[in-house]
Image 1 (tube, helix red, strand yellow):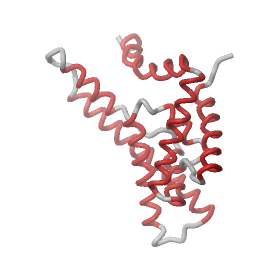
Image 2: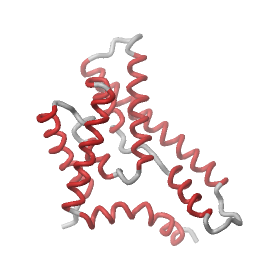
Image 3: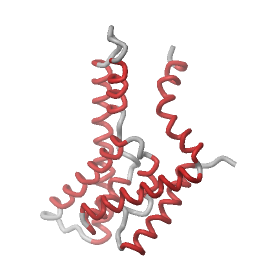
Image 4: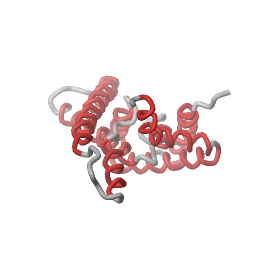
Length: 192
């Protein structure tokens, strides 16, 4: 039987989110969010972009709610929809930045030590928003319980989920983290 690491991470995240909610009265940005964030803890730029998308969504809805009546289910739906749109926009902007940056970072005659900074630049430009509805879910809880409590609960619960993943399925987690590192090698094989 093949293990679905994302499903396992979300399942553990659901349990941890429920425990945080019951023990501390804090929501970790939605029930499924800690599971997603836990898988990407080794990619802090992706997490930063996702949190920025959530904050932008939160502020856009706050501004819009001064002009339009947004409450209840409508507010939840609009928050997720705007979070989705902000995520798509940020992913498109980062992809465009990556394409422009890849031309400027094209291999030229460079000293051996320069390749590590080029690789770091490539990784930074390949960043994107985690999931499609994650920014909206985080924004909902930013609105309901505040920025600091939500971010604190999200970070703490994601670290707990990550720790549990490391303890239960370390090889699968290593394999998942190695996938982005294998992409340039796969492209070289596919694209001669």
